[in-house]
Length: 546
Image (cartoon, rainbow, N blue to C red; front, side):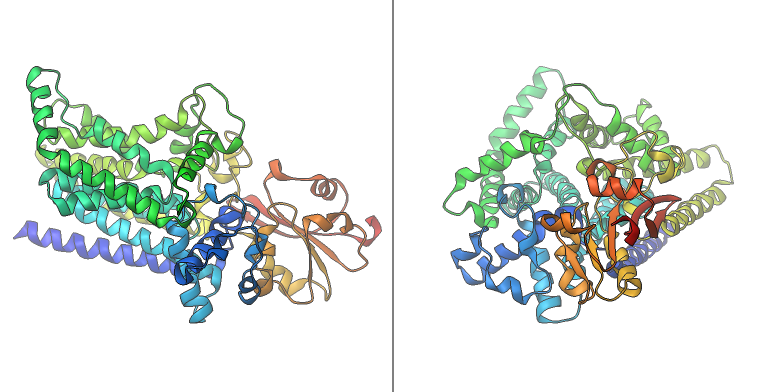
């Protein structure tokens, strides 16, 4: 009876916290601008593919054409810089996000278009959290599942990226769903379960290529490796009995992937161009050396108490008892492999941990295991303070999450812990292009200041990722303010009316105009700081320097 009450209490608490997590994200939507990648192509391709699916007209797949409907929407997506690179943008989340945008913004007039586009990521994050909790609870117990979810819910970057990250959070969710679905199938194989596994893999591939690493995690982590003849005999029997299921997984994954991407219709060979782009690292500079930076970023972006219990969980994993040994191996591989594969020679990492987020569920479960095993140890040693310790850990987790939320709100995706000195100290250890508002979503906050304070008939120039302001300028920029495009940037110092220059603090993207503004004695009219570190500047060009 006690265990049942404990289970119900845990369910109610976690579901309530998930609800708070999601609702807080929803009511923060209006504070977040278009993110860097969304403006480059996610929004453009999502809308074009949606229109194609609705009408069947090939003109929507002519990405070079400026179609008339673009003039009728709140967002001018013709300004998307990568609109001629469809092979860079798998479609699944973009289509879903575009459908929500058109339904709730353009048709329903309930939400701002950008807020509506972001809503899908909040919904999939809520689903991810709920599935994680109940799946872990059934297999590892109430205690581990409860603590695991607390660590996920108090991970600042998950909340921050939930609202605006077009690929990495959905990719993380589907990566996790795929692993869970495979285990669900493995426990008792069936055709319906194998189809679920395949469909999830196809959906994951239609979001981001990271799902390709999930079978490797399962092969190394879940497959019951033993170095004897019986193992090889059992393995042969396993594949002999289940090959049809694996065939269904592969065929359903392929079908879902191709059918979800209109760009591939009639041209399946275009799949190769996407993977070629991924292998070429987007033409970024590649160094063929091992990198410790991804692991350092994991340590620097994980709250201190979670790091403590991840360490404790890993310690308990090393003990020689055989309890859930298969799960322990899976969690170790799931935690280590994403960090390992981005650290090997020839890989490029940027923007913190977002390109290998898949480690996070495993890290949270390991931390949850660490807490629960610590409590169990206190019980076995008859240390009666275990209830007090349990309450203290819970309070500390939630209170530190609230403090971090207050410091970083609404930009929690740039959280760094106190080990590296927070955001203001992280620049000493990592690239200054990464320890800042690398998504550029703070431009929406800057536009609010411009709207309230700029003189009539002023000019606005945005030298870093200007498309993030130009795309929503119809709905977010005051009508009398003229936006100066990059092609017109030579006129910045020639205008007779006031000129405002707004840019995020990302030095690697500064041009000559920004450098001149920083060197000359221009008027800094607005600065947004997060954790005592500037992420956004607005300067007014003084008449005397024009």
